[in-house]
Length: 139
Length: 139
DNA sequence: ATAAAAAGATGTAATCATTACAACTTAATG
DNA sequence: CATTAAGTTGTAATGATTACATCTTTTTAT
Image (cartoon, rainbow over all chains, first blue to last red):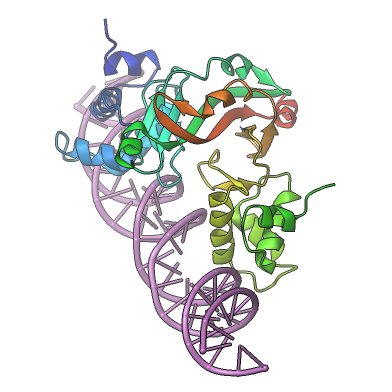
């Protein structure tokens, strides 16, 4: 039983407006960690009146309610991930793709509670380098 | 024997111009992970002609040569760290301070070589929450 | 040493992601 | 059904970063 965008929103106490549902649905089914601009461009087809401001507002809401995470791995533009399970991200300096890495974070997650007296609320692990595909093309 | 800014620059094949030396020296002796703007404001006193563009150029050079690391933990502005040893960073959502955390990264560093076929060149670990001092003030 | 070329620094203008804000629309409440 | 709150939209403002042309300093070759 896969969770729908509706379930996710309601489960995080976010009112499911048509715009929010469309944005969450897009984010859930995208594996490319889209930017605000990409989401806007793509979603305009199915929702021609959708404004960029709404996407900004919506994603801030999602992040505040824990329904998505914001990635600042790319200095240029922020991107987003609907998968809120702790996992690392890799960015390729050549093709700029952001790729999920599901290994490597287990060891530092337990320290998420408190650390040196600071209250830890979230964590991000970012790797940078050259992805598998670009590596091949560079030979 | 503490390494000087001169040593660091020469050791990373960066020509030690007066501006670069001043910037590296400031970065090395600062524990606050300064932004470009903060560096500019502070360094203007001792070097009144120093331009912001030069600081941007210089820090790009430092990062490219591995003499400093760029931190994108704060969505608002990029900040920098002259300590290139792998360590984590914590940002306080209340006072916005960026604090070094020297524990928690050892476990994932060994995976820095390759991972799922990707070539890993660098890594960042970011924690967010409320710092010790702000926690106390909130009681 | 000196002229030519390269590297570095500076200031201004342009770019572009993000935010502020006011007007408008839709949903909730009584 | 009327009133209020919540959500959406478009435009304008902000502010970090970059592009670029000019100027200065350093390096190289004659």
